[in-house]
Image (tube, rainbow, N blue to C red; front, side, top):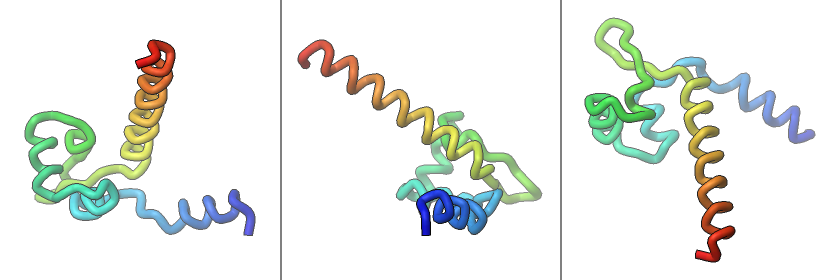
Length: 85
């Protein structure tokens, strides 16, 4: 199976919405840590929205958040290498 086919298979099996416990598991954080971030308006906890009494997160928004953090980390690493830090 090619890498593209594997990625498509994984994408098809992922839910569009994540519960707070699914998000915590995905990010290897505690549920209470996500709650604290949400209360303080910090990402990714603040990306959630309520349906009834439960908080959900769009997988696509979490994925975009993680992609952005990856870009920021790479830029910081490049800057530190350039400074011979």
